[in-house]
Image 1 (cartoon, rainbow over the protein chains, first blue to last red):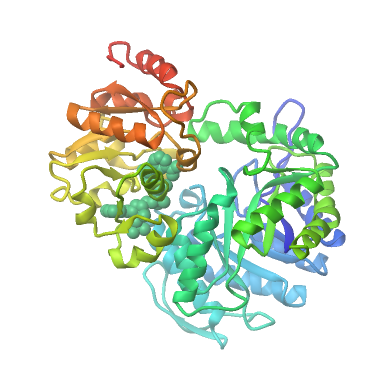
Image 2 (tube, rainbow over the protein chains, first blue to last red):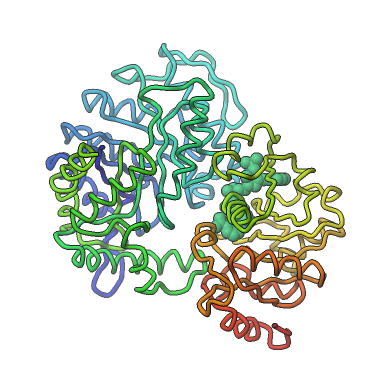
Length: 347
Length: 204
Ligand SMILES: NC(=O)c1ccc[n+]([C@@H]2O[C@H](COP(=O)([O-])OP(=O)(O)OC[C@H]3O[C@@H](n4cnc5c(N)ncnc54)[C@H](OP(=O)(O)O)[C@@H]3O)[C@@H](O)[C@H]2O)c1
């Protein structure tokens, strides 16, 4: 089981509640990735968000920088919103990072985006949501699967490519491409049919309820004749590890309030309540907030349902102090991971 | 939402048919695994059921076939929330509630608005036996008494108290961003909220 982290960047707040700089958030995120590499975390995913509170808008740029500054960690977008980006650029940028990394440490996760920021920003029409995603994924896969530098592709959402060079090629020929989904059944079936690994973002509810989806994914893959290493599941959840569960709860809670206040304004939700937060922090619920024993036990329990090979966590939102993020990354790598390995081996 | 509702309805002992915009054959595996016990059908067959729940993205409502749904009892579980779903003129320029717009498009279907104000994972987690004082309640609104009675029974069997908010237009009180939409309430609380939203409504 691989243990990792993901982030959309986390803009710090001044004592009066105003935002500090978004540049600082990016530098913090970069430092956190380097730290994660040093302490031995397996994976770091960099999301694409376009908000002041979560300013990691350019996963490819950050991954390229991190590729040069790290030695062992796997780096991936989590996710690249390909619907509103040019898959040619996404592929080229991450293949470039792959070359810098020495090869084999860079992944792409293709997502549709869970909010609509990118559609107005890049001038796309939300009515085309489904078609944009399907076509751009097709182009991304065509580029990645190409045996040669020169590629040909035709579609409706982007000018066709007629035998043009798309370079550099990845060091090992291709990059791992994952499908990100928040849990829609058709997305699971699609990833299976395509024979691509699937990454579930589980931000609420009870994660073990994703078991039928993972099952659908695996059976769809089998039915389409796909098997082997590429058929695998990863899981992204909220999570923060601290020396004790109480500390973890107290550290994550203020940022959770800030995040929910902001989302509430957008989505018309009421003010967040502490009891709503506390209702989520214990098994079998969605927030992996606790001490290393608690988190390791819960990962292993969820593994029984989903059979995932990677679990990665986001705890930095709403202005989490950087030291808490770094300590959580350390504990994930040095305390949680060995426990998970031991518990899984004992089964 | 559709798959969660299907599982909950199966649990309540209903026969469930599921259709999407795709042909039934393409959904067979999905339905078998994700909603075991339900049957993947064409949308015309789904529309011929005793009770039809619409849980498609609202902006696609014009892709529904009004002739298939003519005369049917239909729950509209769909929502319009522009900051997330994008801006659609059909709903921006029309003073009616979204359910009335849908009903207008469907000609003579017997539309009841409900199930729009519970999250799909809550639907499978918050259900309780009838009589439990903490049981969560769901509102319904519609202009056809017989249709509303059927929907109220359905909601009860899913594990929730049903509270009648009045005519279809009264569904405004539980559209997105309202207190009813964003919270979780018992029947008692829900009745009070509905009366607060439209004091003349005859909430029962
Ligand atoms: N998510 C929730 O928790 C929740 C809760 C309450 C209410 N709702 C409401 O329910 C609606 C659906 O939300 P969702 O999250 O379930 O969306 P979703 O996951 O995108 O599912 C929508 C489904 O509708 C199908 N569909 C589209 N056009 C159709 C047509 N003409 N006939 C039959 N099926 C069609 C789609 O099938 P294809 O894949 O074949 O296009 C898809 O399976 C929204 O209006 C939402 O506001 C959602």
